[in-house]
Image (tube, rainbow, N blue to C red; front, side):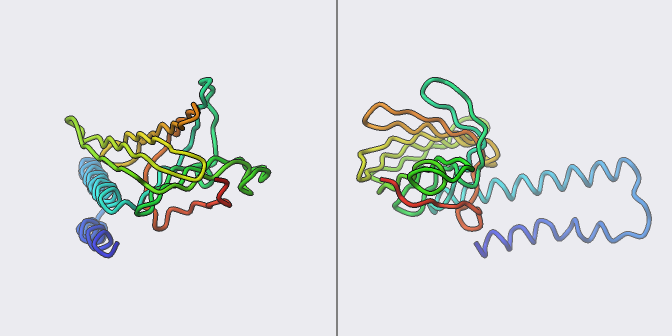
Length: 186
């Protein structure tokens, strides 16, 4: 994480220096500065996503969940996620009512990762991750698609008993992700 902080500071330092001019910037200069800031921010996101996936410490925070019947539900990303923490994976669904098996209105499944495969494909360097996990409730197959910046991510979680749930949201490093893990249900 220190490396990521150093990269972010070194990328933003020239922008901070430019912002100290006393003269107002011309419209073209403001536009160029805004474009440069956006490019630096995107580069920082790309590095964060890449390093998080390599280290296996990341979380897909879901804004939407789609069930087996195809119904789409908007959800709270702090309690609905797919997380990878080293050799363990967590899948959690919850609701803000707080009623449920895990204390956050749903279920939490913790499993040991049996296989973890990462491919980066295409012109836009999209990540495809396939992992198999084993938990006390059975095995899960988790297939994730993540764009290079992590701003668009999805995961399809399938169980060996026929269940299927799709999480859609964004990917962030696990450290500082501000998620709340409920009690492990299975």
